Length: 129
Ligand SMILES: [Zn+2]
Image (cartoon, rainbow, N blue to C red; front, side):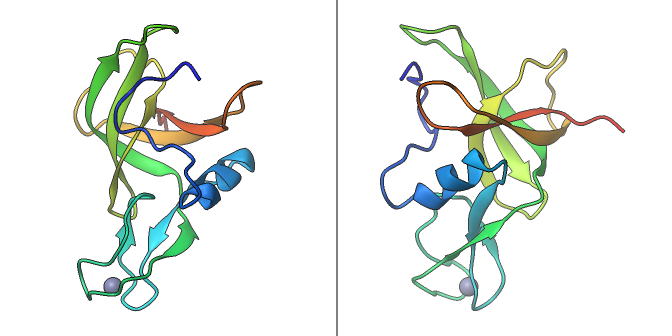
């Protein structure tokens, strides 16, 4: 692994569907089956209705940029890390492709990286058109 960035989701058993989805170019996140609210992939319960169990659901992959930082890694190139707001509502941490002028509210679309080593993962890049 070359990523030391804080906040990026790691495979830990509980988040396997996220990474299995990424391997198939699908952005999987959490949704409450009881009330329909969407949550980040690492959410554990529904703050809206109190349900303790969240289902996995496929998000559209469209998002806007909320904030970003360049995470310095000891072993790899600098990796822009972003906090994005998915079109469905939840915020999640993800990697950001190099965009020319990052700004709050920048429209983004997900694509997936399938490295030779390590997990497939989403990267958000600027959405055009
Ligand atoms: Zn709920």
